[in-house]
Length: 428
Image (cartoon, rainbow, N blue to C red; front, side, top):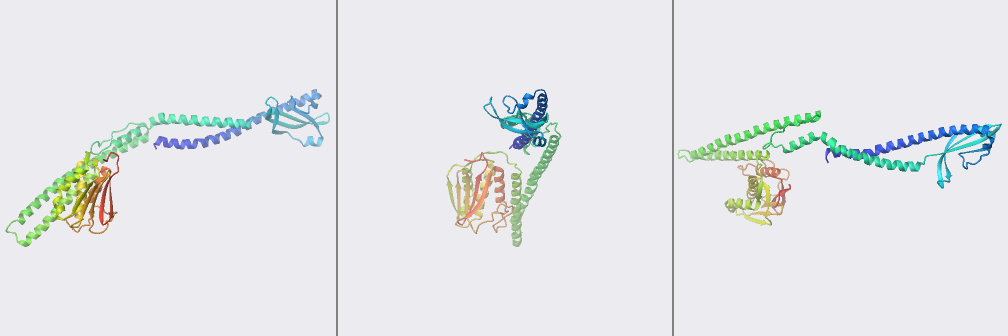
């Protein structure tokens, strides 16, 4: 959910509560004011009627309301003296409405010529039920109008205010250390956006500088380490072939040569792993995985045959993934190497190409592997000291940058490695 809509959600939830509280207070204040006004009118009307009774005693015999808004009847002195002005809400039958309607009544007593009278004065009052109904509809309309106004403000005014923020997000999304290592400043009048923009530009520049330095280091390391190693290995091989070298030294030279070759492989593997993690393989194309598997099986035919390993290839479909061609070959090559290295003589390598995954399985020499550590660097389950233990770590890294998930399971005495597509755009 976008930030603007997120704030709108809370506003939509809070507005009914605020409006309901406001409507309740408004209702009670309005009713109180209306009743005060009616009571003032009734009090004034009472005084006018009493003054008129002094001039015209005939009205003292008006015991029923009839066409008038007052009624007078005689009462005893005790009842009159105990009576105070009372303002009451009651119902009276209205001929015009043909129904009972609410009225406000003043009930009081007065004395005239040593006689006491009860006076009741009425005035039309509010129809509270209708008032509540009208108020409810008004509140609903008010809520709808407010939400509409908020939506308009949200989508036009606030969106314009937040434009620099969205521009920053767009620039961050397009930021790429290899292709687009620069974030240009985004002008804004909001101090928080200015600060955010400044920090992001600084961070991008620092990242680009660090990446360039690291990339230069990797290129230098690849050249400066591999060349001396290759020269040293060649010189040792020539020295071992020299006729004047004693036999006991030939074995020592062979050990040193093997260690240097392992160091060379380790250097290449670490450099490759670092390049993968730094996403330096950016050129993607559609790769037919079936062809890559067959080409690699042809290359490794001799070594697989030497261990008397049977290869079973099952192709359910032509599997195509969009990824870097070099990484695709390295991934499958490492899985195949792992399958024959950790296999037994006379074992099986089973390859299944499915609709959305590639499975490479091999006969196990021992039990299941540790699923929590199998993809760690320098993790080795082979006693061969010449192995560098980076093959599966490289497979995992390639999967992470290529939208693939690498799973492992052990079943029926076989190790199963599955490469499964998890990103839209990869697949058959």
